[in-house]
Image (cartoon, rainbow, N blue to C red):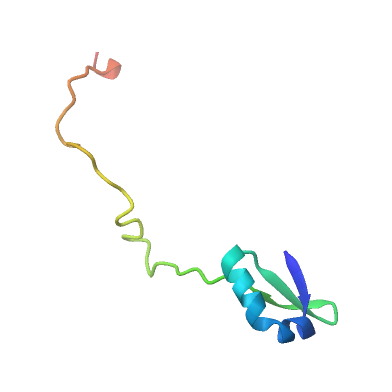
Length: 75
């Protein structure tokens, strides 16, 4: 994780925000050598887990009808 002094962050704030947004790598901001804040990229999270994967799965063909293959477990 990259470390930046507070004075440098103040001078280059907008540039550092763009770098974090593009790279996804957080930046630790220090004051007198001690960490005071962390700049991380924004990631939108779903409100609930129910339906979070909606639209990410595609069904191709018939998934209900039985296939014409005998399984070894059925023997």
